[in-house]
Structure formats: C-alpha cells, structure tokens
Length: 200
Image (cartoon, rainbow, N blue to C red):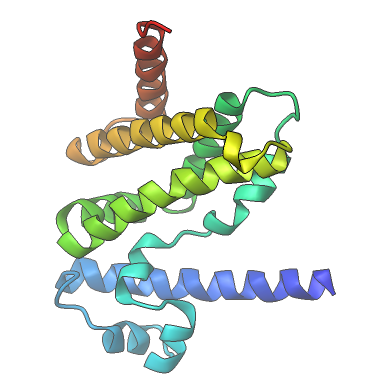
C-alpha cells in the first residue's frame, strides 16, 4: 500500500514540476502579472480545474518546491546525536543543492519573483515565519522533546532561515553570478560569529 502511495505521490510531483516549468516559461515571456492560470493550464495541456487540483493559486506555482514534503525524510537521514543546528544547516543546504541541480535558472527566477511581486513577497514572509516554527516542531517531535520546550529550536531555526534568506537575496542581486552555496555557508558563518559575541 505504501509503495502505491509513493508511486502516486511521485506522479503528482512530476505533474507539478511540469506545470511549474510551463508557468515559469510564460512568466519569462509575458511577466508574472500578465500570465493567467488559463494560459498556464493551456501550455501544460491540462484544464484550469486540473491546475487547481495541483496548485490552489497562481502564487503557489512559484512558492512550491518538491522538497517541502521531504523535511521529515531528510531529518531522519541525519545522525540522532547530531546537534539540531548542524542537522538544520545540513537539511537546508541539501535542499538548496537539489534545487540548484534540478534547475538553477528557475530557482533564480523564483527568488526574483518573490522579491519583486508584492503578493508573492507577502506569502513568502508568511511561509518563512511558519516554516521555522514547523522545522522546530519537527525536530522536537523527532528527538522526543516536549513541544513546550522548543524555544532554543525555534530561535535556531528562525536564525538559520533568516541567514539563508539574506544569502538568497545577495545571490539574486548578483544576478546569480555568485556561488549560492558559498553565500549560504558565509551567511551561516556570519551567524555563528555574531552569536559568539552575545553574552549569556
């Protein structure tokens, strides 16, 4: 049964990636605002109704990536005794590596859209806030901690996500010429250096 569910989920992921690729092609040609859901659906050879089965809104085509549902799986691959900050850093880096390898230009286009389109920027900030909360709760559950005892995890996750956001912003400002993973590593190092300067 699990194998059947995995196969179904892989098929859904492939369809989402296909729709997303067509959407970004149209965004590049016509602009995000000028591109309609109907045009994306037509380019992907599906109906608008089918589009909405995979993406609730046009914004979600930009914001979704295939690593979102894999957070637990990535966490379970880390050593059980690894410090949470190291595990989080490794998971974030692994996710970005996968996105870069799959489609570097699409990732750059996503970052640009999330920075320049007001409704996407608002959604991204909401996702960023809820994302580090989800990451902290995921760690607490996986490591057997009480959810009420996750202040350190929440602070750590929030700080790491903020560091990555700054690195992504620097990357798109540089038109993607810099090495993104190096920027992320530099941001993490800057965060660690800054934290060492705090008095307990």
